[in-house]
Structures are given as C-alpha cells and as structure tokens.
Image: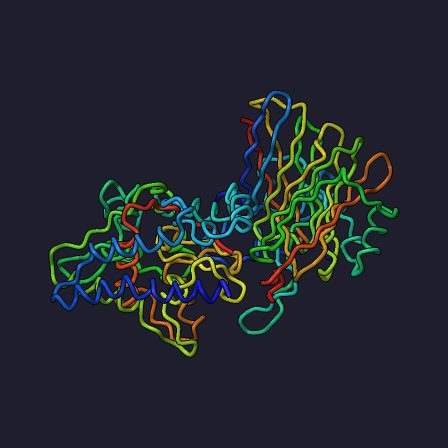
Length: 173
Length: 103
Length: 285
C-alpha cells in the first residue's frame, strides 16, 4: 500500500457510469508535500483522514488471537456489560448489520472480530472522551462465524460473542 | 459532482447522533470478476469525524466492512447548526471529505 | 410433516386462482377483476397476520429475523446513491433542451404507480423503463440499457417520488389489453427451465419458504419495491435485471430485457397489486 506516493494518478478508478467524482488528495496532507503539480485541490475540509494511523498490523493478522494481540496486547475477558447486536441468521453475508454498545466505564476503544473471515479484524473504533461507547456498522461475513465485540475499558479488554449463521457468503461465495 | 458521503447528524440536547453512508466499493480482494480475475482490494481504511477542531470519532476499517459502508455513533458537546467535518482515505490513497450541518 | 401439509394446502390453493381464471376464460372472457379478488383472498387468508400493505415488503413480511436486518439497513439505505443520481439525471436537460419532465404527466413526479399501462396506439404494454427510453429517443438521445445502473437510478428516483402511493393499473376495455394481461398471467403460472419451476411455484406456492438460501417473497405486491438494491449484487437492479435473473435461477433461458412477454408479466403482477403502496426503491438480500 503506497499511500504517500506523490506520483500516483489522481483519477478515481471506479468504472461505474455517472460515478461521483472523488477528490484525491494524494500526498497533500497538511503541509510538507505541498506544491505537487496536478493534484486536485481539497474541496473543503482542512484536515483529511490520516491514513498513517491505520492499524495495519492488526488488520493483517489471519488469526483472531493475533489480531487481538496486535490491537490491544491484552487478553479479553467475557463481560455481560458488552452488548453485541447481530442477527442469528444473516440475510446476506455481504451486508450484516452489527452494533455494539456497553455500560462499561471509560471506554477507549471498540473493535469487532469475525473469526472465520480471512482477516478476523473487521473494524476498530477508538472512542475519544465525549463520544458514546456505541457503534453500528455493516460488515461482510465469509461464512457462518463467531462474531466478537471487544471493548477496551479502563485499560482492560472485555468481550461478548455471538454466532451468526451465514448462508450466502459476503466474499463472493 | 456529488460527494461520496451522505450524513444525517441530529442534535438532541447535548447529544448528537451521527449516521453516515459512503459510496465506496469496499472491494475485499477476495471476489473475482466476470473473467475470473480477482478484483484487487479497494477499501476505506480511515474515516474521521471532526467537530470544533476535535476528532469525535474515527473508524478504522478493513476489507470486511460492507460495500457502501454505514456508520452510526453519537457524541456530546455539539449543537444544532454546528459543522461536522467528515473525511475518509482508502488503501489506494483516494479520499473524499464533506462538511455537514448538525440538525 | 407440517411443511408437507403446508405445501399440500399450497398446491390446492395454487390451483384456486388459476382455476378461477380458467373458468372465466372458458366463459370466453378474461376476468381480471375476478382474478384480482381470488389472488388477494389467497394471500390474505394464507397470511392472516400480515397487514395488507406489508406484502410489498416481500421476504420481510414473512420473516421477523430478516425484517430486523432490513429495517436497520433501510434506515439509511444503500440505494440512496441511486436515488440521488436519478434525481440529477432526471433534472438534466437533453441535448435538445427538454427534460424527462416534459414527457410525463405531473412532470414525472409521483407517477410510478401508474405503470405499466396499455398503449392503445402501439397495442403494447408500456412499462416505466420503456416510457423513459421512449422519452429519450423522442428527444434525440440514445436509449439506456434496461439492465444497467443509469436506468436503475432513474427508476429508483421515480419510485421514490411515488413512495406510499397505491398501484393504479388500468386494463382498458380493449381485447388487446386483456390479451396482454392474460399472457402475463399465463407466463406467471407456466413452468420453465431445467428446474421446471414457474414464478408461482415459488411466489404463490411457497412464500416465506426457503429456496436454498433465500426467503421467498409473496407474489402479492412483489413489483412494488422495484428497482431494488440487492446485497447480493452489491448494487441496484432494474425490473429487467430481476426478471432475467429469476429466469436464470430456474435455468431457463432469459428473455431480452423488456421483452413483450416480460412487460405483459409486469402488467399482470402490477394489476394484482392494485391498491398496494409503492415501496421502492427497495433493499433486498
């Protein structure tokens, strides 16, 4: 992945007709690499999402335990204070609505693991102060799998799991 | 023309609930096209929401997030009429951003 | 055991509306009104707990677990982008300066529930998709591919402007219109393909049941949610896309998009849904 290559093309690569134009800010993150010829200017926002913060290591792990270790470096303990809302049978593995909430205090992170996916870590959400410890998202599941919600609270990691049955896989199967 | 980002941010008292939907293929890299070739991975890695210069939410996503991804979260401290700045960047370095209004 | 009993009942019930239709044909007159009543009665009696208007939600009227997922997705649905794009397309003038609004009654807003209609001049059923292309061609534009995203975006927008409006399909007192209706009805009940299934096999005999991994939608109201965003497709699909894939799924050779037979089928199904609200564009598995 070459996020900082200033010579990359600025064109959007999607080939659907009438696609919405996407601003490419290749290399034009605040300061530093300014003055790149041919870069489409930022439309409005001053600060773009920072790709360098992405936890690459955790997302590359193929085993659930390794992903959790890479993300938190701690072993989770099951807690009924973590609520994982996921369907019993997914209507389609390509789009599974899943949400996590918790009554645990001082939450600093929520993450979701899909054990049977090629890369178990599906998503990770740092929770800053002032933000509710809750997230709803839609994930892909390759097949029937245990889904685990991880919540980092007060420096420890807690979890809740549920099995979600998938009959039509979300990875093209 | 149109942004890839759609947002609904509603303030209720001190709490603002944010829902966002983003137009993005979120290709996992595991799906083959009609010719049997693997479609390379192309997915949003980071999505950020900012209010008053502060990051109120960050999403770190991998290829297992569904196409045209959706996110919902809520945070405190914003008021109706405030701006909410949203941006994303994907594994190919493409990005988009939007400033939405909190209703 | 229960399933076998239900299928048995379904078989009997399946015969009922067609038998009524057959009777009325024997009397030398196609009787859409009688068919309509029998069709409606069949579904409402089979699913007494489903509110009438809920049938337009397809599999979600049949399965609570699926419904919950659908409600979550529909709260901020992926077809949003198609609707937005369709709105933009709709407002963009053709090269000759006219717009789609100039081709349709009420400027094309809130009219989807009136399609398909029978065109006395051409003697054919005109669906919304066909009407849109007729508009384009009348204004010197190339027609859109019936199976692709642009058509889906336009029809998604038009369906959206008609959300909640009840189907109002008319069959004029014209033997050609009645013939088109009848052809649509016959197609619906005819088995085809390697799997030897008719539309009715799934959508009349076994709604709420499973066809491999899918929960089957009831035929009543089945066209109300079109066009649809299917998670399976990761995108939008027009009526044509849905019908051709239904044919492929029973291993029958699909017809060409908007083939006269498909249009007759849509005419029949839409008439059967008269009074039910447009729910499109719809999100589906």
